[in-house]
Length: 298
Image (cartoon, rainbow, N blue to C red):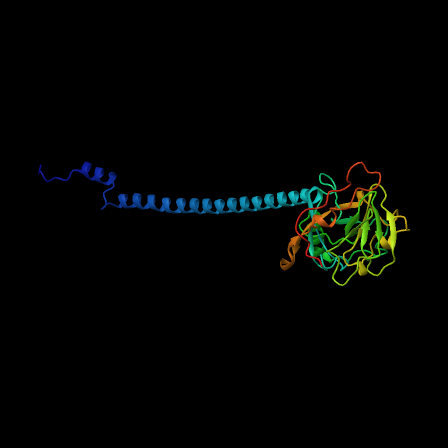
């Protein structure tokens, strides 16, 4: 037998080993690559899609949680600490003008005492505003969102049942308008009211009054004396009906926040009331004058 006789076992081993020239080898290699491309591509696409949706859902949840926390925090702040109000009229000019936005501290009265000269927001004590009818509201979803933002404190309160005036007399104070020089007197001492609107007098051209502020109440007046329906207009001559219950006071206006060119703190120089004595019969001063810079009113 010749040495060059073909050995069939060698041929079979070559084919099994995946000889690149063999049909079986090409079939196996091609089959493996196709399976890997098809299966791996689908899995990677699914993973990317699932990852994107998970990230999107996580981002939405985070935004919702932050928004809810912000609203809850705003509601807490509005209820117990501060609240924004807007000024609807000119009764406090030139200290405040129509459409000013002010921040009101609800810590006064409370941890901090009221003082003569404080600008306070209070609920209508006895139908001072008359029949104002229902407040105008925006229709539809926009109106609902507006009221909701007001409720949680993210928008200034434009309710029609609050007023803003300046505290002139504290409980027990004897307030008279006016003396021979035309000045307001408190417990027999004349005060120079630098916050009264330029061109106005302390009386504002209104009838004279002579009252004693009852316990638990304050006497309030607007800075625009000739255009303010304040304690003078609702009193019976004794101080009992024109004064405002301290329990009706929402808080003290501490700063103007809008418009930007009118931003400033609301305070009164202590010298205005520093010489006013305690009311008759008081064992200690009823009030400590406010400190700070002038309100900027005339």
